[in-house]
Length: 128
Image: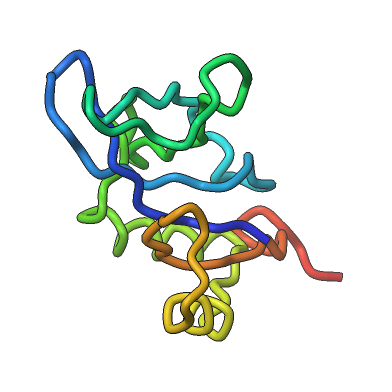
């Protein structure tokens, strides 16, 4: 099962804070083509994130635009992302998503978008 969430990210190139869409691991299926490993930068000199900069934990997996390029997906891209997921063999688990968003338990203070899994029955797959 995969988790999509919103992560604040400081982009050194544009020198702006942006919200990007992250995924907990590289997924199976066509979505994997839109995943990039991103080094997490400190959000400010006063506030450090919870990543260990001496290990691989200083990186997250972020999604890039479905239309090409290396622009990160942001919350405005969620409708297109959901369409992509449903058309390409992924199933969004609304019950787990509701449970995690309504409870007191938070995963690293992330804003969870959804939990989903890959069924492998998108275009190009034939059901026997």
